[in-house]
Image (cartoon, rainbow, N blue to C red; front, side, top):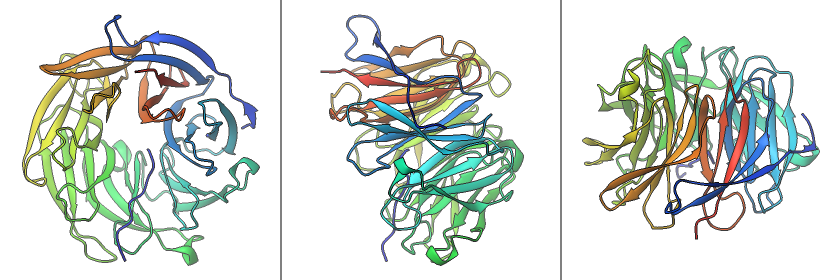
Length: 397
């Protein structure tokens, strides 16, 4: 059977979500993109985690988000034009819901949600019955306490058996990367078998999926901020128990935080865009930056390209915001005066434009076409100090 790739992405309450539209220029008048800002939800106890997927199969992208403090998981139903209605999936669950990924974990054609519980070291998933607006989300355990500090999560068929497995990182408490083997439909009431990929790595953060060596199998990208390490793990394709070969992308980068695979140079392979810095104790703020690593030989050699300085740099993603057929970069600043910015790719380098300023502890950001106009929009969360979920309509021509 072929390898399945998953994770779309990458939200009690059944009330209409408050939406505030604020026209906002990306930068000076000459900036090539205008954004219209929408406040989707405020008043979180602690906001971290956002994903996009068509949860109700009506042809548009909905959003999901969790509230760490109050143990809430929401989905926001999209009417197809970027107007959202808030629904509850779970409430009052202790253990810190945070980052999550969406994919069909049980093979029934409906996108499910896999989410970490950082404080308790749990991974759980919520089965989408196909009628999400009527409730019907059933909670299942992937592991209960088996991944201390569970932090980030990604989905892919890692063992080639036709279903989606779960890969995860474990922050400072677990200091490891691991994957959890999907037991298939008959085993969904059971915990999933855990496989450790690598242990004893300080502050593991990013886990993401890409085929770095173009052999048709899903490999994994990882960052370990405390170890100043960015790596990818080659999936050797041993059925039912992949054997992983570690490749170092950068072993001396100062505090790699969150990044994602993207073909930045359009040569057909997966490069990596990355935010580095976040906190002063990890790296001096003067060194905080956004950059990308060029995959030069099917993952064997990498070259770093500087994109721009960004104090508090937390997450970077790549998307073509200005419709010029190359990838721009969007990044968040986790500082007290946090920001969401985008870097326009120009003929001679990169130009930074603000999207949202004075937004404390901006963390996760995603790109998705939320209003169906064919242009990538943005959604992001900001934690303590702001505690909001916002999205930005891309109004480029």
